[in-house]
Length: 180
Image (cartoon, rainbow, N blue to C red; front, side, top):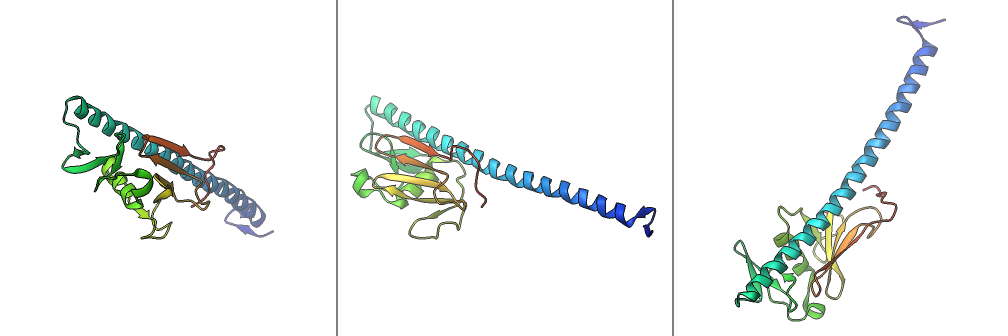
């Protein structure tokens, strides 16, 4: 029988096959952990956005109690315009009617002004979905949608309603994330 430095060829192939199976299982688990990490990171991002919205609302209410309520808040030199009901609505202009006047650009400005170190995003109408990890668009009149881009369209997103301040997170029930 042929040997390869003390091993028979048959033993070598068996060991190589076992190592291949172990590596294959390890790579599969590694990829699954990466998808799970992105999902958890997106859920944390939606919670951070919710916290920032609530924080802006509190600042606006304090201004209102002090008699100095304006249509906008000064967020470190950047204006953050509030809806008529006192929730963040735009970073650039006063939005008279959320359902009629809110644009995807307003949603982008909220993303940039409310979050600390916001991730780069693609914006509906100016860039294709998938150019960046996150995509912003209007889900309906007056509803900002912030989506984590995956193979499955709209599998992971959260909606923000500037009229009520509500942030609604949508992730699949099984929490298993499709590949990117």
